[in-house]
Image 1 (tube, rainbow, N blue to C red):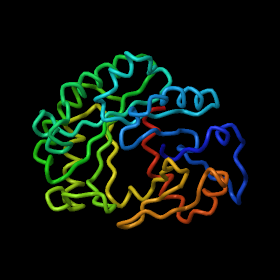
Image 2: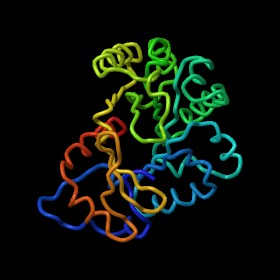
Image 3: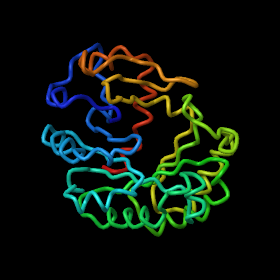
Length: 254
């Protein structure tokens, strides 16, 4: 769960800590992972948060979505469903996500969300040295799918668990050039790129309640939202403007 809080905290009024600063992700809770649809109760949690006045975002690789819908998951419990599409063909998608990645299933899930009234579709693509040559064709695919926003992320090697940094590595200048070209090809679909440095503008809540922030090549623990109110943790974080700026893409969904 990204940049949210516990269910009890979601209903509490924000605490004042100096000049009041609003951040979109205090109002929006993102379920991410790993793969959040591996958690069978994800729909129950989303529904509870929405009853507390939160907007909910589901970020998924899309491969389990149709199966979970058959099992009772409701798209209406989410304001936004984000689906990862890493290439315009099965080969490119698998080169990014692994040999078992189901490209056709992902595309079917994206079309299903796009057709759901009241739910915004966000497509997400990690841009790396592996799929950069396919990005123009992927942009045309995105244009045809017609999502509400296309998020493009520069590949990040942050975290000891990541491998393949060499083949995925993509210089900042090349990333900026590629996403600008992709934005032109995908128009009128809005695009929201995020370079590796901008990913430091995130707060991540892990399953143990730890609030983590990317910093350089590692993650810094800012507190634990099961022990302290999230507003207290937020008030103590330096350079909060980076986090606010990283969430401004949500405005395209308003």
